[in-house]
Length: 435
Ligand code: DLL
Image (cartoon, rainbow, N blue to C red; front, side, top):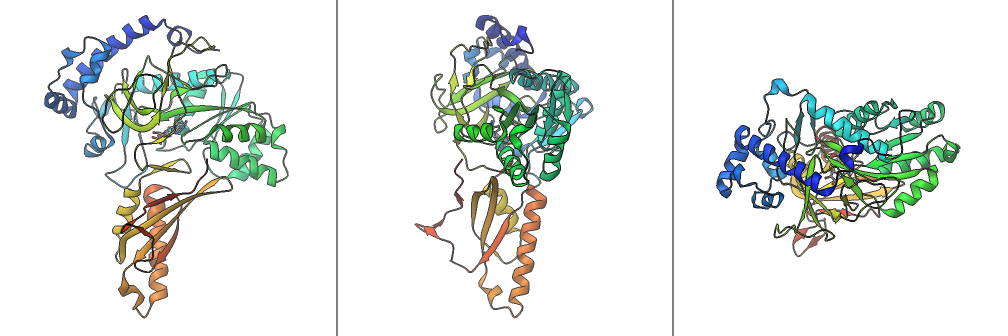
């Protein structure tokens, strides 16, 4: 089944002509409305008139997350705030998070793309969708919600957390589809089982899982435990949110990228060189229809590769492989994106904490856990109230991390020089998760 038969099955040459027309428009628009683009295009010696073919995009500079940070919060917007109807943001300390804006039309486009994803998963208006992506500044909840409504399905806006209640609703409301992170799906399955519930006997037929990396093995495990078909959905706030690419029920090999709205390239993360399809590299996206927050050649840091072979489903849209890793140090902990530098900034704002820390990420059961070991200054250990001071410090770190980043962490304060060093350097991240 295909939601937008016309646009999802365009002959390649027609699609490319449409992409070129849209690309020319967006490049013109950002050049004239966003100071940042005018400056970087001028510096690179390119003008909007240089776009004669799709290939000419290569001559334009990349946009990075740092550029977004430098223009925090609204500096990259291409429309006045009076045209912005929604804001979302990735987690982060002030000044570091990525803020994205949408016009009314952007929300309509996003809803359509999410509706396309649901239809690719075999859903119709007769389905009931249990939406356990978090609602709020995170794009997952509202993105999936609007798509489900656009399709005409019945959506249960359960959001994240409160697992026992979720299980009760899964039993009582009988949803036929579920959306959440793959690790949360496993967690629901196991908790339900522990409560003595036959999770295979629920009404669920399909799951639309994304927002964090997962493997084929995890897919099989989820499918077995919940007796459903598990499909992969990809997206990122900067592009819009969920719904940039989606697996189809027929192919189940790679996610179709909605190329009538996004151009995709893969590049060598070291040199920036554009790679041919099939080769693993960093995904770079350009939005060609977004109004409020267009992005040109945005470096996602996600590593994947592109498939150009036709798909059984009839869509002519190229596909991307599951995300194989990152070309930076971003961690995704319980669906929340976290950079070690953000944790460092929080730690260093606390008196007595040394700039030596280690993040230990594990998956216990099906939930990610984060432990932060932090060295504290010598003077604390000579303080008469040592225990009290340490306890307060620990509490403050846990609270600040939760408040700023939205993740729960366990904090262990340790004496100076106890964290293992490799050639003098503290190993910042130990990611012990086997996904
Ligand atoms: O995670 C949007 C989303 C919500 C996608 C719900 C899918 C479902 P951000 O919080 O900005 O947006 O995080 C984006 O998450 O750059 C990837 O590193 C990672 N990611 C998203 N989907 C997948 C996936 C949302 N299917 C970042 N597989 C991206 C692996 C994923 N990683």
